[in-house]
Image (cartoon, rainbow, N blue to C red; front, top):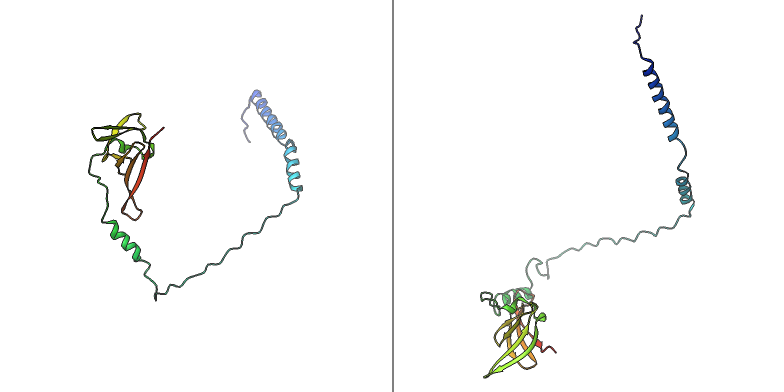
Length: 182
């Protein structure tokens, strides 16, 4: 004989209600509410297919056999490079040990020559810098960020000789001019 536990009538009613609601929820999910999506997919499939351009032709690799005869060693510097290295180690160099002057903090093209002063044979130039300060300079003073030294001051211009890298590890001189601002 099998014994069945006693279940309260309220519990049976709850179980039946849960089962009925579950069946209704599953039935509601099966309705066809995606007709707009199905229509769009059908329209896209009905479009005429376009042509895909062919892939570009791939060029084959051409090997090169390096033969030592009559060719230079690719791991040794050329004669021009060797000369450039020897020139780079000697000759013109800026004096990096000296104290920098205030106008060396600014690029040369940001400085403005605004005036010229002469007194008892001494000549000065008046320059304004981007920091809104006014500076008085004379021949021999340094200006700009390329080790530029003032070589001549006239009433209309300041001639500057800069020392710039030559691209080969050395240095070269370059002349620049600051014209009187109007």
